[in-house]
Image (cartoon, rainbow over all chains, first blue to last red; front, top):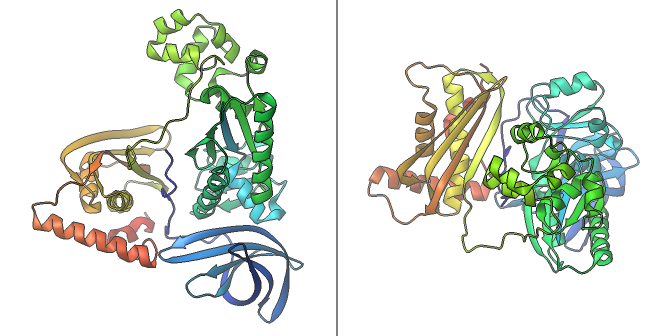
Length: 98
Length: 386
């Protein structure tokens, strides 16, 4: 039977990044519903972004830390943000498209 | 009745859901390494229509469609979504099995065509609503037909194969579409004049058995609606039959140190999973390949089992046999640990005891701070230039 733990690319050293990574802290306003955060607004580089839609949600476990990733649709573009359950902080990982 | 649920262009569809601007465009999902030196892990249906398919070198794919978008694969996303889909299917009153990251099998009671189709529609709708992903479902009395059914109307298809429609549905399907019939078998069947599934159905069983032995029996029955099978029941065994890891190197290399670095990394990945399950392996298989088509595949069984990364590395290095200056250009490498059994006794030797202690300690630290927080130093050479 297929084993979901069979990760094949876990933490392989990345030679060249395919897109610009920011990994910058952001301020996020969100609701917590059904055990999951639902982002509403965020401030990145002193600019306010209103979340129109959560395109996609996924999680990744790194040791004890669970990172919850969100692809967020705003008027300015699509952004990937991440919430850590250990540091309770939000980070903007990358600009997916503008 | 068996339901075979096959996600449509799974990796590519997840990437399109994450980045909606890629929807409707040809998209290639490949390795994180380099977009021109990898193979296509998955292609969107827009790319598939142009002739791009999984397994094709990306260089070739970009020649077909230079404007195709490229996204590096991220297995964490796909595994998470796959797990979520599995959870979504659990409440259904059916036996459930996951046959791969993007394929699920369910076994429902035979409740009549309309009810089965409405269950299929409901599953498709809930996956679409929850993940914005489409899937194709094949419903049939046996797994082989269900799997084939899921391919007939891809993408977003739903087909129930029963005795009323199955001859009509199978008449134009080439036999190589049947799971388990590969290029070699296809060649032999074609020689017998069997080109499509209906011809296989009508071919006399005794002649198939005479020609192919046991496989002939399977070939004669697998596409019949009268042939019913069940999903494998959960066994009492708590560990798999084998554990393996493989990787396609960024570029072909004959540098022994670099090959050893990759081999050590794969050994540690295998060993880590063995330790987690508290099992050990007696048989190690190593495979390697280099472009265009030469390959190496060898296995060896050892009296003493092991769950140590270093020991698996030494064993696989011996199997690969690169000693005495022997050179081998390698593009892809894999290690498989089989002959698994419960770890029953502690080693008599202090050195091995210490190594196992160290391995388990490393697992604990990596479990707390994330995989590859600690790893064998030689692994750093995996990305050394030639």
